[in-house]
Each structure stands twice: as structure tokens, then as C-alpha cells.
Amino acid sequence: MNAVPTLDPPVRLVAAVEQARSAAIDEAALDVGAAAAPGLVGEHLEAVSEGPGGVTHYFDATYGGYRGWRWSVTLATGGDDTPITVSEVVLLPGPDALIAPAWVPWGQRVQPGDLGVGDLLPAPEGDERLVPGYLASADPAVEEVVVEVGLGRPKVLSRRGRELAAQRWFEGPHGPASDMARAAPGRCGTCGFFLPIAGSMRGAFGVCGNEYGPADGAVVAVAFGCGAHSDVQVEPVSPVAVAELVYDDGVDLETVEKG
Image 1 (cartoon, rainbow, N blue to C red):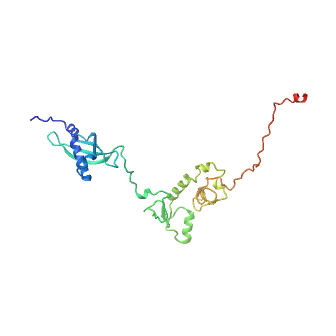
Image 2: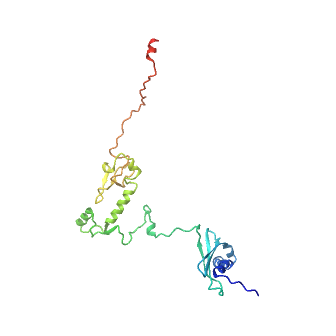
Image 3: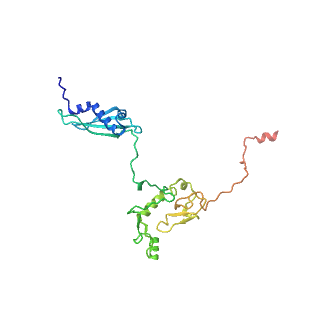
């Protein structure tokens, strides 16, 4: 009987492709049965060393809907005189695999405009945008109402809440950097249709009251503007096209008189 040559553990493990394939087929058989399992393990892709005693073999996975996925089979051995064992078999996405996007908590998936008729969206616990109504809000208009009625609303916007709202409105489509504002003949702060809001943001924002304006009923920055400004005037133009006066200096008047 010929002796089997002794190889370094990583080399033995790299050569054990068929053992790794058999382990992947056995794992696939748990889902589809033994008869169909061999068809789910494709060609051998690569072998990656996991250290002096381990190697991971990768096989193409031919599952329907799992394009780019790979069978990962990790083999291990304790030395030359120990058998090769299967440590792990798992189906993993490859670098070009189709995978679902990263999971995002529900509270972070909701975007402005997503709320529909009948939907409920409670504020998260400890929302930094809100403070209890009995605390100082740093907004004179809010605190004045609280004093008048004794308590006021259960919650009001915090300073941080107002800062976030102001930044959102200032950088939004009704802010001074929008294309509409840059092309406008005037700013909302000088427009007769501009309705200033109450509170600490009165000097920076208001509501448009022009039904023909693009921001009617929306919060607009004082520096926003549109073509429906109250002071816009159209220069009168004659409805009859008038030809420009043309001087023809190419006529020789002396020649004309002699003729």
C-alpha cells in the first residue's frame, strides 16, 4: 500500500474541493431535497486561507433569484494526522450579488409628504424638537400665550425644533437660493401679499397670500420672491409693430438733382 504524501494543512485544505462541494450539496438538500441539490452548487470560484488550519471554498450558487450569491464552505484540520472537517456551510452574497438594501428603522424611513389620509405619526419619545408647554421656550410669543391661559399647549417647539424648521424652510424651494427667487423682480419681505408669522421667526419667514403665486399658502423666506410680487409692473408696449427709422446714406443727392 502506497503512503499518502503528507502536505501542509493549507495545501491539503485547498485540494479538498470535492469534499467542500459535497458539504454544500448536503446543505442545499435541506431546502430542495437530495435529487435537486447538486444542481444548486455551481463551479468552484476560489479558495481563501483562514489561517494555518482553515480554508474557505466558494462555489457559484445557481438558486433562482440569487444571482451573484456563493456557497461558502469552511474546512479545517488540526494537523497532518487529523482528518479534514467541515466547520461551516453558508450561502453568502458575492461582490456583484443582488441584495436587499440596508434595513432602516420605520421611524427613519418616513419622509416629508408620506403621511396620507387617516395615517397616524406620533412624535418619538424624547423628541428634541419639542418641550413641555410649562417650560420656558425662549419664544416670547409662545410664553405670552402660556401666561394668558395659565398653561398653554402640552408641548411647544423647542429652540432646536425651531432651528431645524428654519433651516429646512430656508434651504427649501421657497428659500432665497431657489431658481424662482433668483429670477424674481422683488423679495417677499417687500410684497403686499406677504403675511408675517408670529413668534421668534417673524423676521425671517411668513406665508404667501397670493392665490396666483407658486407658494400660495406656504411658508416662504423673507428673501424669497416670485414673478407675482405686488409691485410688479409691466411696461406698456404698442400693439402695432413700428419699423425702426433707417437712414440710407448711400444715395448721391447731387447726382439726383442734376438728373
